[in-house]
Image 1 (tube, rainbow, N blue to C red):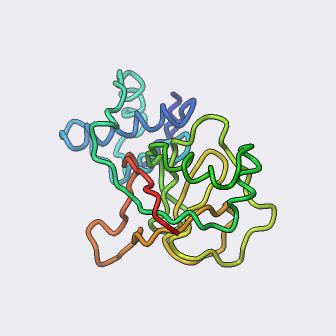
Image 2 (cartoon, rainbow, N blue to C red):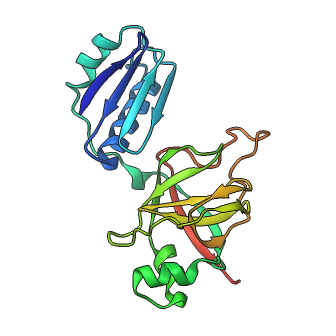
Length: 205
């Protein structure tokens, strides 16, 4: 891990990979809940980094966190959010070709994996989910769509994501869910938060 001061009140932690970043993010949240983390306004995870914003003394905190021994997170101890999915996406054939399988096999492969929210971004409620088996990464579309319907389940690189609202996007679309990913009237508004376990449940098309 590398700790970098960002301005006068922030600290950026860089990690070797997403798993290490996820484990450290979980430890930060555990310590904050226990009251053993120095005051921090925001803890923001990304693919291989965690940003601590609103830190009184970034240099002092950097010296502290690099000495931590971080245990593996207990992801499986958390209940999983189940998302019903109709595997009716327009890119099933393209994904099947990349995977070297028939299109009818894509739903079983995708739904058999267990996912975890690595980080959120792009749009309110959009979560980047890891968990696809190694070798199942897919490229983004060469030409992004100008409008992807809300509830679309897509793949890009090693990630799975669900579009919380209609927006442009270049992910390969394999299905649709009626789950509400973002609802400002709900607390919390986002259905999925970093660290959340997720399972996709195939529905009849």
